[in-house]
Image (cartoon, rainbow, N blue to C red):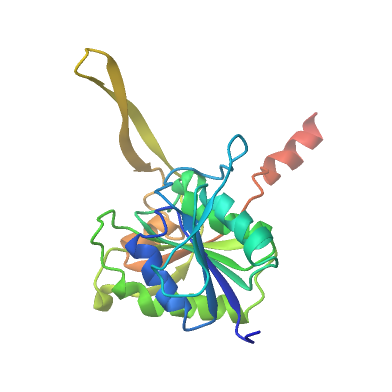
Length: 255
């Protein structure tokens, strides 16, 4: 058995995406890497799990490592399968990404990338989700390499609180334009959505979800949206607990 850390790598763009290949290549420098990722894109799946159909695992050879698998399920399924059926133990680190597109602010709720990282934290492993603010398939992940290395090294050395993971978003900039890393909070923002109605060749309506992202606190200087706008990688410590703790105390006193 190797004495190196066991690092599980997953994502939501699929096992053959450029982002996960780049992340796996970086992770190999720090430990023994196991890849379990969806066999097809699973963006926007959030924390969904498969309960009404079977799951399948297929061996792949895209990452050039002994243990890599394409899973027919969601990103969270991939983490569960890896921990319970493949590794049969808790990995020393869970990495998810690198996602094509931002998962800052409210996007963390919808993100399959971040849900996989959160699931890793729920399993008791230090976990990080990485996203690049570039949706293009030919997106350049190289400028972020040294910063990803710093964060992986930090996560392996420092004891992260149990149940907490990092939501890391990377600005779409050249290497010399990225200023560094900022630990910040999640911005208060939302999508102003609409469904674009169209007609198919038979005259039946179908719909495309579209919308505009709105930051409700553009002047705040301690948020992920601010950090990204200033040329920093944003890192938000994230957890699964959705309790509104401040209001809980208030309602206890009132009710």
